[in-house]
Length: 150
View (cartoon, rainbow, N blue to C red):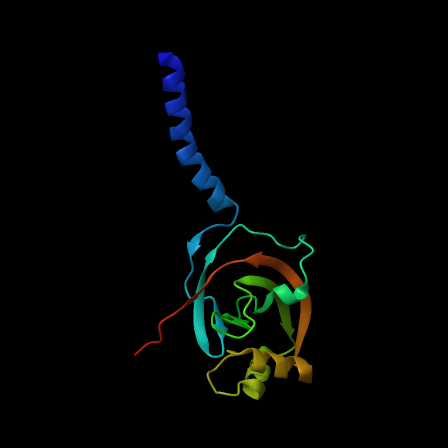
């Protein structure tokens, strides 16, 4: 009986060490730094290991994040408090630019130095300065406002 108890304690201790490591490896990594803009406001998130790509959920149950592949922070179409916000369910669309700098110069409506709203991204898409390469992932994560600098 003592051996069974000892074996159970060892198993629990091992699980406490292994399970968080597996979660980290699966894409869960904690709170990020500034990750994307919504209407000029930076937001961060918490990486989660969710994959909603094969759920069959309607497109209307997701908001969009436009992926800039490192050129700048991404841009999302909605945040908490916005009408129709889908609670952190996202479809990520990749963007491709023939000339990113020229597109920013032409479509950066608030002169922030990058795209920081869905309206700016949509204007670049409509003009052909950017190309939506399609959905690259679907997932769920929270949205946390980054306080503005003073």
